[in-house]
Image 1: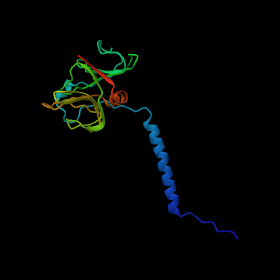
Image 2: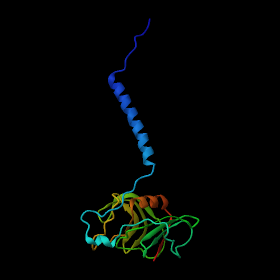
Image 3: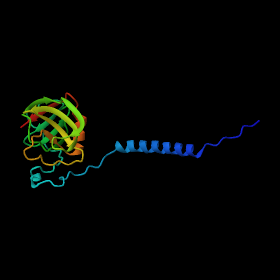
Image 4: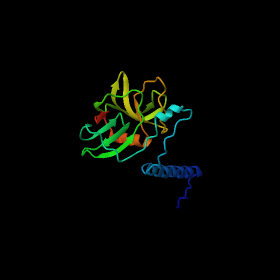
Length: 189
């Protein structure tokens, strides 16, 4: 005796199609996230004062040479005077260089290592930051590289002691990938 065919209820079809669509969108989103990303030019935050001109917009360049006396081997080089960072590989070749916006407290010239990394937090200036790479402390202020989540870099508030060395978002992402715990950091004048 033949068994009558059972039909699936409509809610089962809708649920199955919805789950399939979500899976497809998730896969496409992950693929898109791994592709090249457009980078917006950092702009001053609304309400930034005229002192913002003291912190010009960094411009990436490939021509700046790594400063003499910055050591050898794989390292991060930070020049206080040039307000510039170099990512230097094990063969002493520069893989990336960019200018930065320093805080109000600077580390002394010397050799350091990346001690701690933190995905994200609120900076001492109240700005949401990410890719925080701590490497020094000066006069009770922690010194770290980071970038603002929104890509901005306002000037530090007058009278505030900040040790954050900010950079554009794309450079912060590159530094985060390069500067693992224990990576050498060479600070030069």
